[in-house]
Length: 576
Ligand code: ADP
Ligand code: ASP
Ligand code: MG
Image (cartoon, rainbow, N blue to C red; front, side, top):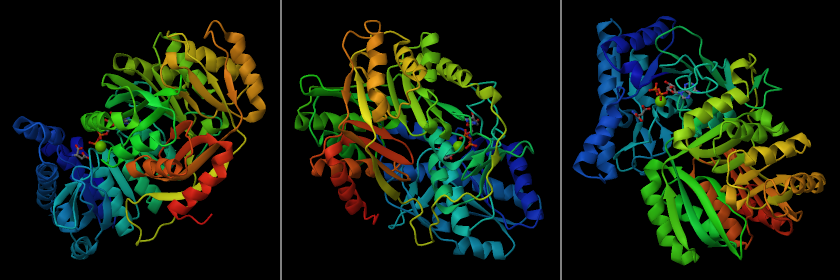
């Protein structure tokens, strides 16, 4: 299975290079299926065309329009292959039978039929399939969302049980950061599913994160390489070795996100569920959810949505405002999210401190911080975005990353069968950890470097932080640490006042961390809303939230944690 992106089919010259890769695989004795994107810029052009006619084109008609970009490419690629003496046939997503739900412009693949493809392969033909599109139960054309020709490729590879899925693009692999922004980024020989899942979903567009989800779930051997060179590329696999002492393996910048802030939210159970549920019902993903600690029973809640979802998400929040009893809903579009990702940060190593200090040193103000197990993300102003990315890449010395090797066969714990829905949510485990305490550090002074100073002092005292959340400087920082460390952590913080803050830190030891692990927990908007919905129904207050592709973590009162686990297991029908 091979996939060629927009720049790989941009003009006749590029198409010939792509065709040469396809022919080479055929001549090596493989049956080849290729999927292609629309030519570079085409999808943007089609969207602009539609918006010239109406600011809100009907999603069904938009899908009919957008699918034509890929349809052009498959015809051109097949014409090229035929002219080069290799019989080829083009098929649209609908002709193959890539069956999806009916959520236009964001459809999810449910099943992939293989009969039509196999019939043509058996005739000795190369099959070229249009990426990014499928068909719903009523035969409407659907598209899956931007960048998702990668998903077509991996889903086809999974359904056909292909030996290999190669993503051909305009860079020769996955780098420690976007090489167009960070010139000394280095190419990774191999990267684990979980790390690239996380990187892809926070801005590394070199592979689309939903394609990695499917690769992980169905164990599709995946690699990313260049259409224009013969470099070996990057292998995406269950795990890698050689990274043991490296806390971070990649950084990403996303400029396509907006922040929504709801002020004056009552601090009662069910509030997060209402917000996340209402937004999730509209198939909008939200991330970096932070609630500041309440002052006189009212808190400030902030989260990010993609720019393209902002209008709808804002309307939803405005409608909820009165029902929630909140005071105000506002938004900012000019923000940048910087994320550092690495499995090595599970072991501590003061990653948050290093990242914040690097930004502080350059006078870049951090407007928001969240962490999950293998990702720390901060929000800065978009004008600072690229500078911040360079600073973080340098802080973790990613230009000197050691060579890593793919681990031959790593059990991912997943081995799904054909009867599983291709893109279905997969929840594996609900667990809890009582050995946690929360330290709340009230309002910091609103100047660059404060978060770095605070987290640096905790790291110097060898205190490992688990979750770190900051809404804005003035609303303070919350961290969780091991219970045994919390008294020492408080001493460290209090010793820093009044430089950081005038108020003493507050400690809560009667909390526990609840974690839900699986695949697709962030990309499925419904997953978080189910979790928060269950906790709301049980009347359990959520104190802190950390979300990643593979885990949702929430801090709840310790007294409620076992009830929460039982209710979640029942709802998610897990029998552990
Ligand atoms: P295609 O059209 O082939 O799908 P994309 O434009 O979607 O290609 O993705 C390739 C681009 O991703 C590269 O040109 C590069 O600028 C960008 N990119 C972002 N992050 C990374 C990264 N960590 N490693 C490599 N490329 C990256
Ligand atoms: N053509 C689609 C896009 O530009 C899909 C893709 O390129 O992967 O988003
Ligand atoms: Mg792409």
